[in-house]
Length: 287
Image (tube, rainbow, N blue to C red):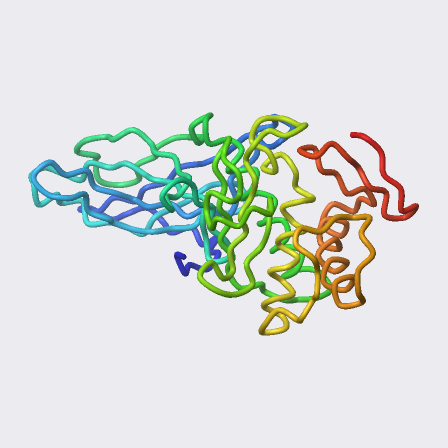
């Protein structure tokens, strides 16, 4: 987990002999609307041939998906000036979204060789289309974190890791054959494992379901707020219509609160399993 804080400070243009790198990053949300990639980690790299690439700066995009680096020494040890490219990863101090082999979902700009001194704009970029739904997961968790931090609770939720691969079940990550779930302890502590199989909904499984993502994030919030997860006694797996004990009702009930609060919506929607629950009437229907 990269331990960065959200920073919206824009540094001024570089002086002679330095370069300040700026740019913008966006992604398409579930409604296919292009939105700013807020609070995304951006690595500013110098591309090298004779040695490994040099990391020049690490910044966080602001609320408009914009970033500004510090003034960077614009002398490349391999000759000329810096050969700049930028890597954006679906991670910050609140969350990280990982795929196959624990790799980050990310996007890259092209490389520009021998950039001039002053301010260099890499332009506007979006992640690869094959990673689009990983950024939906990032977006849902960020909204949950912001609600907790800026809402009535005033609680900055410690970091969480979400793992998802399009077309793969959640058991791929831990071997637990229980569908989408959260690990409160053990080898995979603080991890959400999301089912990426299509089921009855669209491809990508639960990446399409912000309510499900924030339900699992709700378990993480409880785990961190309590310092450890309270005994629940929940059967595994469990579902909406099972009769369970008070502890299980509390832990599952709390987990269902974040999506209702974040989206101001009384409906809990699970497209993968094709149902919608109306929390106010305690009824469900096919989606």
